Length: 235
Image (cartoon, rainbow, N blue to C red; front, side, top):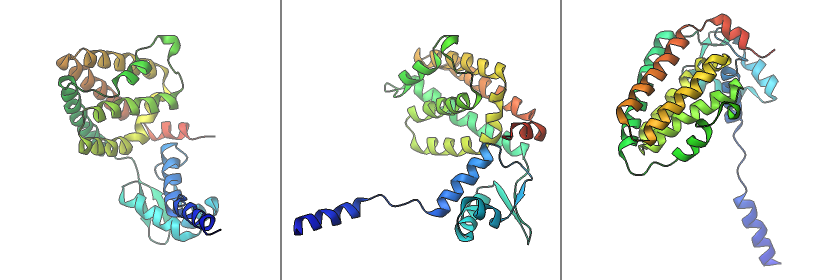
């Protein structure tokens, strides 16, 4: 009986702790931002979020304050919260930083012996047209994963951490790039060219194609309007 009691006690101790409610709210509101359920300028109150998610205002306030510190939201005295307006100058700076991080990583990747993860990328991007996804949301996720994998394979965890932060901060506009069929096709073609150059250790062509690829995405982002964001909002 004592052994059974000890086993039960150990089982209780190893059970995973439930996610804090503030983390649940944080993730949901961030998802609302990236999936265009919340758009720049949209206003809402802590009470509205609390009611929708069936939680108290305390975890909502903690989550919203966290998102405010990260630059997504702004608080208004006695009138709730809103999603910050788009700052295209900041997006330009973030894309410039992305180019620096990714080109440095790919240069190192072309030169090093161990290159984990590249075979998996080959299976996704070096495929025929009939094997390619045409779903914008899925291709957006694959695109993020492609660039993250190149940075991570270079082996510098601090560069990878910084790159993840940049990726998240540009996601709201970057995902719109994949609502257009021609951009999806171009992404497959360009990723395949970049990957082949890396696999063949052709450093300069890989760097030139990668930089051009990101610069094109940056130029497309500049064309995005608030109207397009409204069109992307789920019905």
